[in-house]
Image (tube, rainbow, N blue to C red; front, side, top):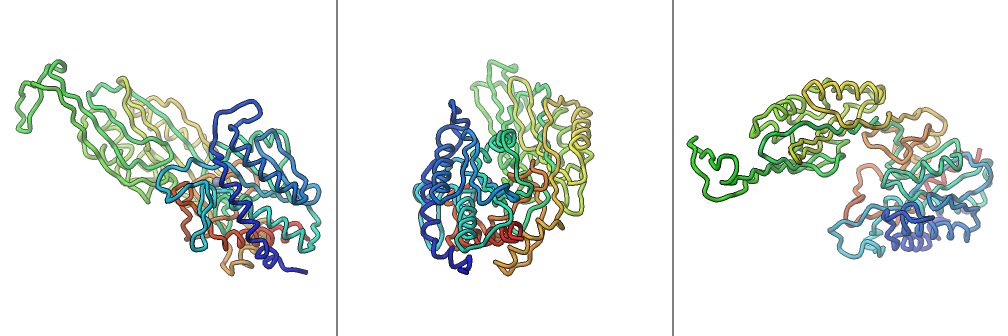
Length: 446
Ligand SMILES: [Zn+2]
């Protein structure tokens, strides 16, 4: 019997060329059209993948351009979930993000690690199993989504049309196995703003803001046309001017706020604006605190560690102050409990909660045969110890009971995911395929 590794090595160029074809499609979410729920390009990437799977002899299905599948064997026991949509290219690339480049063993292009490379590796894992003569007792289904980056409406739709296999993993996270994902809550609040300083800080809710800007307008025609100088004397304004004050912090993902520094809480702490809402926010969100203790939160659990609570946006508009908070809470708490506490703290401080939505934590038994099979496949190929980890972010399987993330980022390595010069190495592409083939063998061969 040819071994899996040799088969994959022999098909290294085929894998790279399929990845090149997929990367060439700018499969960023676009305008929905009849038959194209996420625009034409995500559907085009799906079409390329399904055509290739069909040519290679797998039974394929396209579920209305939301997601597609390719099967080896009948009544699949295992599902491998990947996605073919990508985030926009952004800036900072050394060459076209949509032309796969090979440099020093790296394959550089948008989607290389997230998640087109792993999708190709999953297909070749399936091929390697079949072509090396292994007969599966249970079937395997590859599922290719097209909307992971924008809310996973692909998966939600697919699940209304087809049942998922009993075991599902996604190589859209990291090794060894992610079996715990904290719960998440997004809170939007507001209050009346009567101060003549505009605040502008934070543009996305799931990031620690790196800049908090205060803008004050001084106009001789307004506000009495006077201002106080630095010696405390009032003087008459002759010309209008704008004063901008900036507070700088360090950006980080909201699930790991300890890696950043919050520019908003830095501003609150400085006391430059003296008014009730700012004082209350400074009390609820002391600079440097990242677990929401002062709001009455501050929980932790043994597996996922400390919870996180980030005041990530603060903006004024038409005499209203708007704020937003990103919370990742422990595996043993519920959405209702956390939302009761944070909403109570905000309302008690005079704010109106405009919305408070999120998802419950996700946890899969780390001692199940399924997870053990994944961990031992990882160890067999890499020689590294396999263990379950827990994260603050949510993966593609967050809503799938019993699902886990398995790869494709190796611990401690950087891939520039979502950034410029995103890559996977050609060797990792082969390693991923081999690990997945071993996992399929462990789960479906028996
Ligand atoms: Zn992804």
